[in-house]
Image 1: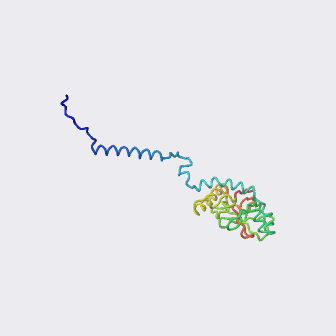
Image 2: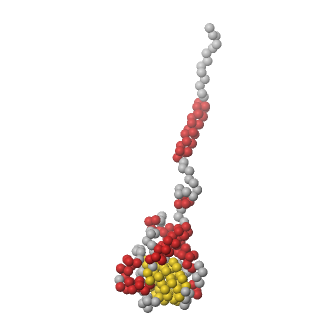
Amino acid sequence: MSTSPDYPASKPSSGNRGLLVSAALAVIVVAAIAFDTTVVRIGSENDVRQQAFSPETFGAEQFPKIKANVEERAIAAADLAAAIAADKKAAAEKYGTATSTGPVIPVTLTGVFGARKSNTNEMKIDGLPPETVVRVQTGPAVNGTDLRDATGTIEFGQFTNQIQYQDAGSAINNEMKKAVFAGLDADALDGKQATVVGVFKLINPKNWLVTPVKVELK
């Protein structure tokens, strides 16, 4: 017969139980975070830096497309003037791209540059009525968003707000200036023969303000 005394089994202290519970909770939280975390590669479509709108990138991508579209669709100035005189609305629908402030029409001008004034040069075009004034934007400032609106493929709904939409137009103009105005001495254009391909907004049939996509001096 054993005479050894019986001792009750020891129980974990409340402090130890707390540590065990905390450790278990920590493991659960870490596992949940890992499960809910998505790894994003730099430069991927999920990289928010790639999603931010860059006017410069947009302009560089879009101007070559706009230029090609305008050159393909451009109508000779004399033919366009005759069509406008016959039926302005029909001419706008046939040759132009509708906007909220008037159709934007691609045109080819062949003639002689005149005097320079306020970032434009007048141009005398054979076959146009003498009362029709044609001015070509020759920089350095370029006004309007006719290039942005010329194809009908760039719309407000593609952008977050009006500021982005305006910035897109300005960026396209800037790309045009790099491509068209580089090497062009606007102050020396007076009297020079040229072919210009560009666009203008048909508001006043007797006053065309053309934004070029190509200028070829002869």
